[in-house]
Image (tube, rainbow, N blue to C red; front, side, top):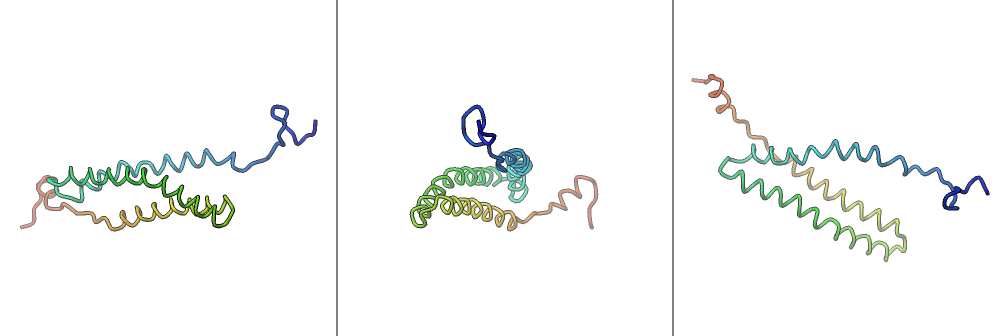
Length: 131
């Protein structure tokens, strides 16, 4: 048997760099997942307590809406660019660009989020006040 073929399946053995991808990818996903919980804390702090429930529900809807829309948009983009160019790699390239665009929209939302400081409330809770 040739040295380039594995004994199990008869296919040529390859030194594939994609085999090393899962560990760093899992690390990055795990590191970034904390932002999901921070969304609700940031929303709760940015709006009055009276509106916190409605705004938290709206923020939760946005996350799930993205999860529903992104696969179908990805598929449409993949099909379109695969048909136009005749290359599946071009379809996947532009399909993954769709995910980047969704991420950039989220990043813009985070940047536009203003933190409201509650100095007066904090000062009265620790016994300080400006007169």
